[in-house]
Structure formats: C-alpha cells, structure tokens
Length: 328
Image (tube, rainbow, N blue to C red):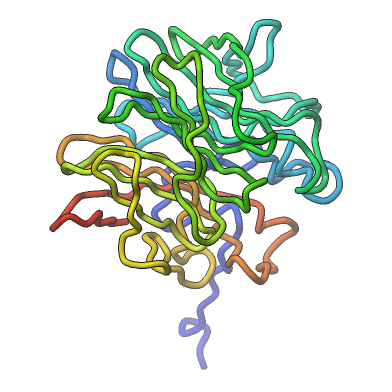
C-alpha cells in the first residue's frame, strides 16, 4: 500500500468544532443551559451556565459542575456569537465583566432564565452556596434579579417555592394573564413543578405540571396556536402541548423525544440538552447544548476530562398538523 492511500489525518480532538456547533465557551469550554433574548436594538444576548469543564483544579467529585458563573455571549443575528464576559457578583447583584473570570469562586450560579416583563428585564437564576463536590445534600434556590440594560443586575431575593431543591426556572405570561414559573424540583423526584403569580411579586404553588420519568430544564413558549413545554430527559427533549399553559399532554407518547438521535462522539451528532426558544414568526429557534465527547454512558478516552466539554447548537422549530417539529 502506498503512502498516498493512507489516511494520515489526526483523529478529532476535544477542541475541534462539533458538527453544527454555534458556540463554545472560550474560558472553560463548558457552555450549557443557554437562554437567548433580543434587546430593543435587535441585538441578541445569550446567557448560559459557564461550567468549569477545563479548569485546571476545580476540586473533587462534581465540583467542576459547581462554582460556575453566568457566561454571556453577543450576536447581531443569533447565529454568529462572540464571548462578552461573565456576570460577576457585586454588593447589589451582578454586573457584566468583559475579562476572564477569576479562578476562585464562592457561590454556584446555574441555568439563568431571562424575560422582559414589559418594563424591565428579569433573571431567574439557580444559586447554590459554595462549591459542592457531591450532587446530594445541598440546598438550591431560585433567585430573581432585575436589569434595565442586560448588563447590571440587582438582586431581589429568593423566590419561595415548594422545596429547597429547586433549579432550572422558566417563566412566561400565560393566556389567563398570570405569570407561571416552571422548575425542576429534585425533592419531588425531579419532575416539573409550577408556581403562579399575578404580578411577579407574590407567588403561590400550583402543584406538578409534568410528571413521568425524571427530567430537568423546562421551557415554555407559544407557537402555532398552541403552548409547548420542553423538558430535558438527558436523552433528548420531551415535548408537551397545551391550549392554556396549565394542562399538558405529552407529544408522541411516554418515550418520544426530539433531538434524541446521536451518532458516534465528535464529529457526530449528540443528543440535545436543556435549552430555550426564541420565536421568530411562524417558526422558532431552539438553542440547546450537547456533550460532543460524552455518549451519556461510557466516557470517550480522547483526553483528560474531555467528556465535560459542551457546545451550544440551534435547531428550527415549527408546528405541522398540531405537532411540534424540530429540525437540526
């Protein structure tokens, strides 16, 4: 065999682009849980959990998943993104810092959800004291922040919910005029609970919105004459439909998901995880993240901690014959 018939290319590396990726965090390569909004000037903002995937010494166990900041990226079109910095703690809340974050952190920030209430911006952020090295035994709370410019955020306080194991908030105004906050309650078997408010000031608990197998990362939105609630089952996203954003029916049965197909690890296609939706008319964009170097079961032996790295993607959503259709 002659040398010109040999494939001498280097095998894919964790730093290589994943097929179809939109964004990778340039600091720790751990962008996850993206939420995307547009400002009054038409600019696009992405807020995400900046997991410390490549931190040189994050601590034992799952400390690398904790100790995270909120990362921020900017875009003119929602497709080409540039890193803008992190939301760093200040006396009154959080402020955008364009530099790279410090290695030392004392609090964990997870899964921001950002909405506009008609007057100002609000962020619903999961906060955890310290940097836990285990999943269990640590309180998690959802905290509200407010902003006029998406850069400086004032801390308003903890949202009172059904337990102190509440994460992954999603907030929307529903057809009845009330605001609802959906969240993962780890104390209830990791299903989606919901709280209701008339004014975003006082909340009351309204039970479980979605049962079934454990899941996280709920996100609710209206499209094509229906309401939709996506939940992350760690093998793709379940789709739930509603006419009132109160009572939900799962699309396709108990095992059906979107973004569940997955090929070999990078440069293949991975299952979609925790994301958010921006409606752009008759269709919508679903921003989500993947693990390019983790197949969900066995770790891929390409480099130390490669399975921790993540990439942000976008898919198109549309409604056809009353069903939500997802196209990568």
